[in-house]
Length: 181
Image 1: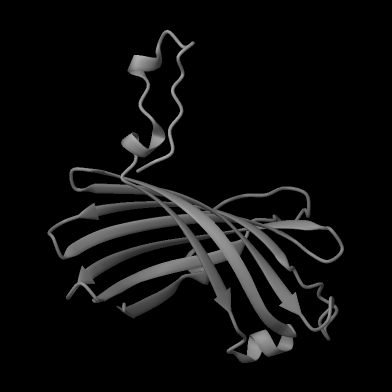
Image 2: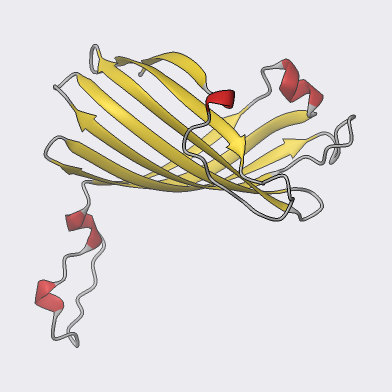
């Protein structure tokens, strides 16, 4: 059962589809993280909490989704030992495109744009992208093999931003195994 509102004053009401009939899924999630690397210790990171909403649509073998999220990080200090100001607030927009080759094999592309705001109120942007081959072994086990990039968008002039979907200088290969409960 969904939430609906009838637009009786709208003469085109019969032609409009409610968003939950157009989309295959609307997902809300809550996430958290704890420090687990030397880099996080240097940043004096204590943990984070986040939330996001994701809209998804499948058209034959093509899957498309758009997600919007907010994450709040918690730090012991506003400024790291090296003078870098930590960024506790992040707003993220992620677009994903997938092509299902078979029931178990898929090709995926993901692009995320993030706007972070540090403790001094200064905003900075970053982008990440990934392309992968994904395989589902069972309903609870899957894996991915791919390459990703993650970098800031600020150009050397300090005033302009540029998004590069792929940058070989910062590309990293990855292999993931996901086990669901």
